[in-house]
Structure formats: structure tokens, C-alpha cells
Image: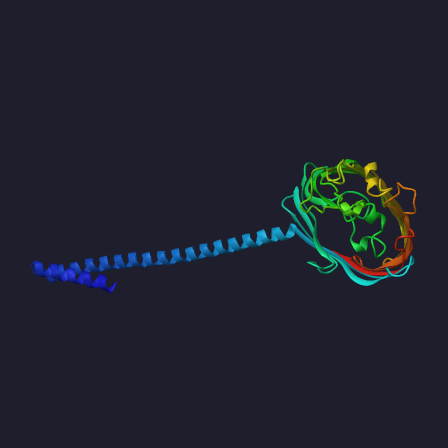
Length: 411
């Protein structure tokens, strides 16, 4: 502003010097005009300064709003992601003190953190979701260790309609009671029952496609096209449980087909049946196809404090397997388990089970077992377990009687 005023004064002096000397009246008029011009220029400069300041404020405010908006957007996205993502876990530790009644040696006296499992699920939208389950068995895995790390589930599920769902990936085979629901707080007994271990090889998962849905009120179904079992012909394997490939570079030469039907139309009652066809349980490595058919049925019923669970399962296998192990063409078993909830947190149970992986022969190959015990739920999904087992085994097999203790949880 000082430079501007000096310029005007200099111009005035120069003009005055180059012209005739004005009269006092003319000089006063000139000064008045210059003063008016200076005042007008000052107003323009002040207005320009104010506009610059206001623009700066608006810019700062806009930047702040943008930053807040972006932050809010980031928070919204994070919140949405968290709301659509679920994590969970279950685990159980067992103590077994068992004596072998068939000869010397073979007793079992050990403490084992049997399994630790981590769940992760995410909803991509209202119709598409992912679910996964990773398990560490026997506390430690690696070369020379007892345990292993396993991916037991990892699949995408998509709703084709309100009543029909498609599943693709690695998932549990829909058979029996324990294979689909085996968290320790959901069943009685420290160890999983032997029928759903040796005949239905729980936990049993395969890779492939599955279609499930509801066909009527209370009626639902599951169908699956998956990888199949594979027994090792060179090692002479014949027991169904040994054929689980666990979707680890699984031989898919001869896949399997599964169909399950379930009824839950009465409160407290579940009835289910499964049929599965295996094209070749040796996956072409035995010299001829050895196909197999699994039939399974189950019931789970609760009425007030009383509960009942029962499962029956049987494999009908091609007779060619008998050249590997006599009687292995039929592998079957069943159990029945009544229970009584004495208190909200305390329940007692008894279970009788039979299983035989050489039921097609005429020899002494059948196992049976009684389990008597209780569950105490410290919290709804935290459980302490105790049971005593009495086995009757073939003369050339271990017959283990004794105490089992366990603790487990899920969330």
C-alpha cells in the first residue's frame, strides 16, 4: 500500500512539474481527486485480502470435511468387515488311565491335549459366505512329533434361493451325529464314540461340491459329489478309517457320491439317514475296482431333562477286499446313549456300543464297550467330563478298561 501511495504522489509531482503551475483552487481539486482514487484502491485491496482469507477458510474446511469423510468411510468399512466376520474356537484335553485286560502290556496312562481348533468365517454378502476350520492335534506337529496341523473345512457357500444352497470347497461329509457337530460341550463322554470313529471315520471331510436345502417343513437334504476314500493296497489296508485322504493331493480318480435326509419337524427330535457310494476305495491301485456303499441312520431326541442318541452304520464292500483281510467286506457298528440332565449344569449318561471291521467273516472280531459317566458344564460351553469304560474285545486285541477325564470348550 505504501508503494502504491508513493507511486501516486510521484505521478502527481511529475504531472505538476510538466505542466503550468496550477492555481491553488486547481491544486486542491487535483488533490481531492487523487484522495478519492486512493480510497477506492484501498477498498479494492481490502476486499481482495478478505476474499483470500475466506477462500483459505473454505479450503481448510473442505479439507477437514474430506478428511473426516474419508475417516468415517474407513471406519464404516472396517465396522462392516468386522460385523461380517466371525471367529471361534474349540479344544479339549484328555486324561486316560486304562488297563489292558488281554495280556501283559498295552496299558494306557497318558495326558493329551487332543485338539485345538480355530474357526474363521466371513459373509461377503447376504447370499455368499466362507467358513474355515484349522486344527492342531496332540499339541505339537512336525517331523517326529505326535500331532499334525489339518485344514478340516474351507468352503464357499452361496444361496441359490431361500431354500437351496450350493457349497464348494473342503467340507464335512453329512453323515451321523458327531461328524457335523463334534465340539466337546455338545456330547457326552470324554472320547468320541467308537462307532463314529471306526465305522463312520469322524472327523471325515472331503473336497467337492454339495447341494443342500429344505424340501418341506421340517425336512432337509444334503447331496455331495466329492473326493473318495483311498486305502493303500501296498500296505494291505482294509479298515475304512485308514482311507481318509484329507484332501491333501487327494487321488480323485474315483469320486464318491453322498445323499443325506433329515427330519426336525418335532421339537427336540432329529432323525437322519445317509447313503454314500464309493466307486473304488483303492482308487485304481488294487488291480480291480473295489466299490463300497455306506448306510447310516441316527436319532437324537430330548424331552425335558431326558435325552437319547443312537447311530447305526454299515459298509457293504466288494468281496475282493476279503483277499486283503477276511471278513472286511462288511464293516458295521451301532450305539445307543440315554442321558439325564440332573441340574442345568450336570448331566449323567450311559452308552453301549458295538463295532466290527471284519463283520463279514465268522471269527471273533467284534468289539463292545460300556461307558458310564457325567458332564459338568461350568459355563454353557465350558465342560468337565468323567466316564468309566468297560470293553469286551477279541482275544488278540487290546481290551481297555478304566477312567477317562476331560475338559473342553467352544465359542
